[in-house]
Length: 242
Image 1 (cartoon, rainbow, N blue to C red):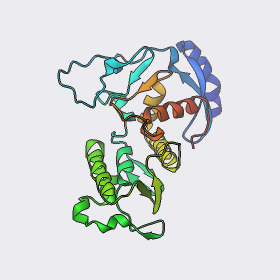
Image 2 (cartoon, helix red, strand yellow):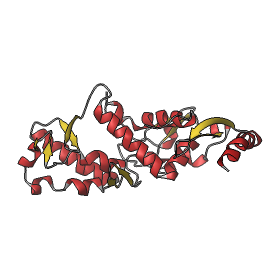
Image 3 (cartoon, rainbow, N blue to C red):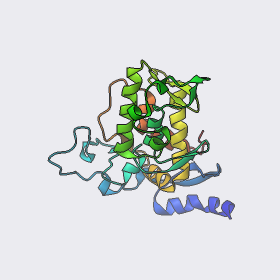
Image 4 (tube, rainbow, N blue to C red):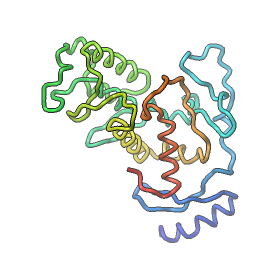
């Protein structure tokens, strides 16, 4: 049945006036699917937001240039944000969101690199949250918890985070282990949340832009919108995501 579906999809695409491109299914099979590069996009994605007092961090949808779209949390594109409540399982554990996954790495483990985690020098009361609790968080709650954790790390002179008992450089000028870990978690989110996949593919050839002002010279893993564009290109090319 899949073979028959593959054979007729290009014709369905031509009938609809769409271009086609190879796309990997969740199982890894390459399937030719319509690519919406010439189809209209939902107007709500670009609709001006009339907010006289938007948050200082926010970039509104109307800021998009030609061929661009803002991944605004004010519409369905917000599902691509790290803040979105898109639970996923990664290496045997479940996370409430990408933000929860990201920020929990600031919190103590029992050991790091084979030694007692030096972050345990501070009391549980000072940390406020357990690592697992942060992992389950979403949106601004997770971000606030992570900011708190990062401040405590700075207090201890720690400039790294940890995952599965291993320390990671947190702000590397080059794509390193932390980048690869974040990318892998984004792939898990994509594969385990069909709506994430649907919306990402629906953006077609649009240039994705963030809905918030970022810090200068941020590491590549901070640029989640660029990672999404790379993953989108790989999906359209029928490449396995890894």
